[in-house]
Amino acid sequence: MKKTINAMLLLMVMVMMSACSSLGVKPWERGSLSRDDMLMDADALDLAFDEHIYFSKEASSGGQGFAGGGCGCN
Amino acid sequence: MQLKNKKIAGLLSVATCTLLGGNAQAESETWDIDSALLIYNETDRVSAIEPVINAKKDLGDDEILSMKLVLDGLTGASANGAVPSSQPQTFTRPSGKGSYTTQANETPLDDTFHDTRVSYSLNWDKPLDRNNRRNLGFSFSREYDFTSVGANALWSHDMNQKNTTLTGGLSLELDAITPVGDTPQGLTDMDDRIRVSSSEDRTLLDLLFGVTQIIDKNSLFQVNYSLSQANGYMTDPYKIISVVDSSGEPAYYLYEKRPEDRLRQSVYGKYKRQLDNKDIITTSYRFMSDDWGVRSHTLDLTYRVKMENGYFIQPHVRYYQQSAADFYHYFLTDTQAIPEFASADYRLGEMTATTIGVKVGKTLSDKHVWSVRLEMYQQSGDSSPDEAFGQLQNQDLYPDVDAVIAQFNYSFKW
Image (cartoon, rainbow over all chains, first blue to last red; front, side, top):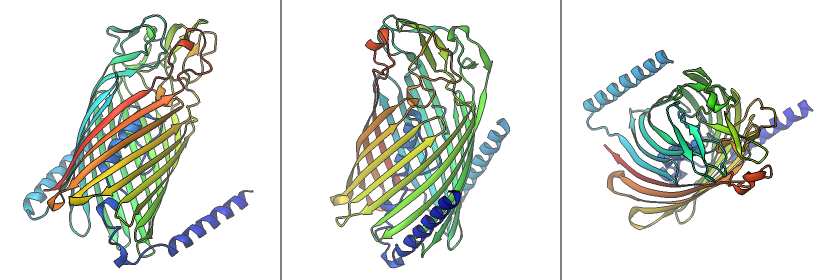
C-alpha cells in the first residue's frame, strides 16, 4: 500500500514537472507579467493587513506566507 | 528572551543607521515608500487604527533591503466567552481590580480591552547567482502583555528559463505572554483567582514549500504547502467559559484552557490572469487543517479594472468557513466532568465569514500611487445550537461580528 502511494506521488511529481516544463514564455514575452499589479505579492500592505485581521478573528493563518503571528490577539 | 530581544533591537538599529547613512551618501538613489492607514471598526466591539510604513531600496545588482514599521492602537470590548443569561452577570476584571456587569440577555463583553502594538520587520533579499535567491527576515513586535521575536529564511530557485520558481523556507518565532493580573490556572473558577505564573511563552516553527509557474504571457499560478508547529502557552488568559445549571443559567465561570501543542498544515493556490482588456483577475484558495480539529476553506477573488487616466477600481470578495476546534464548547454543565481542555472563544467555533469590498486608486506621475479601500466583514455561526436548553434556548449563543475596514494607501519614491 505504502509503495503504491509513494509510486503515485512520484508519478504526480513527474507529471507536474513535465507539465511545468511545457508551460511558460520566452524572455521577450514577459511584458504583461512584469506589471506591478501582476506580481504575486501585489498589494502587499493590503495582504499584510488582511492577514493580521483574519489571524485575530479566525482560527487559520498563513498560506501564501508563514503562519506565525507576531500578535497576542489570538 | 530578553537577551534575544536586545540582540534583535541592536541589529535593527544598526541596520537603520546603515540605511540612513547609505541614503546620505548616495543621493541619486531612491527609496520605494509604501505607506497606509487602516481603520478597523466592529459594531459595539473592537476598534483599531493602524498606520504602517514600508521602505524598500535596491542596493544594486538586484539586492533589495526593506524595513517596515507598524503601529496598532486597539480599544473597545471583546467577548469574554460567557453565555448570556436572563439575569445580569458580574465578572471580575482580568487585573483582579474591580468588576464589570453585563445586562440580562446580552453577550458578555469585557470592555477593558485596549492595547498598543509596535512591530518592526527587516527583510534582505539577495541573488546568489543567476537562478537562486535568498531572503532573510527579522521581526520584532511588542504589546503591553505580549512580545514576539522572529527570524525567517526563504530560498528560491528559478528553472525552465525562469518560468518555474521553487521556494522553500523556514520561520522561527518566540513569543512571551505576560497577562494582566498574571496567568490564571486553566479550568479553575474565575472567582478563586488561582494564578500560576506572571509570564508564559511559546515557540512557532513554520516550514513553507512552493512552486510558482508562468503559464503563458498573461497568466501564472502559485501553489504552497506549509507546516506549522506551535508549542507552549496558547490559551487566552482573558477568556472564560460558563458552567450552567439545569435551567441553563450560569452557576460559575472557569478560565479556558487549550492544548500546548498545535500542528497546522495548509495548501494554498493562487492564480492571476490579465485579460485582453488589461483587467486582472486574481483568485486564491486555501485549505487548512490542524490537530485541534479545525478545518478551514478560504476563497478569495479580486477583479482589477483598468480605467482611463491612471485610475483603477478593484472589487474584492472573500469567503471563509471553518469547523470548530474539538475542545470548543458554547458552555459546560455543572453535571458533567470538567474536560481536559475547553474554550468558548468564538474564534474557535464553527463559523462562516464573508468580506465584500472595493478598492479605488490612481497612478500619478513618477509611480506615485494612492488608493482607498473599503470593506465589510461579517462573521456568523450557529446562534441556536442543538445543545442549548432552558434559558439558553432564548439567547443568541453566537452573535454575528460585523466590521468595517477602511484603508488609505500612498506609495511614492523618495
